[in-house]
Length: 167
Image (cartoon, rainbow, N blue to C red; front, side, top):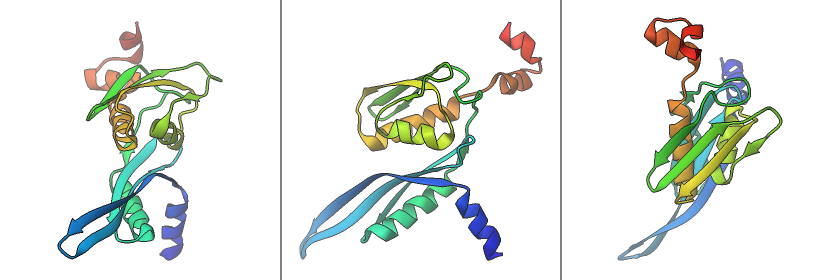
């Protein structure tokens, strides 16, 4: 059973997007803790984002990764890019994404690049508008990826064939 669990753990890549040291002032002094934003992905269209908070960095990392595994979402991809243009919004951040030709690369900044690489996107154009806070950019990226739909999914929902949708 543990061998199966270890194999499942290895299929995901993990990235720590942000580690913050936060403090709370109380009557007895300052209490220091850590907040970690982590993302995990399989490189084939699955992505998860999680936030973990604890008194020590290793515990916060474990919590963030566990939270990211719980929040995994499936993303519709078209080869190594996305099927259509989309804008994701979270807080004061708006992230615009557009498909790109093969060989373009991941043209993205901040946390968006790391998340798109974890999903398995190799060719994409992005632009961040508004706040460039890593937490907001990461959430906006995941929100945009969740809204993507392939032509096959749209055709299935409408009860039509793909050629009717694309023409």
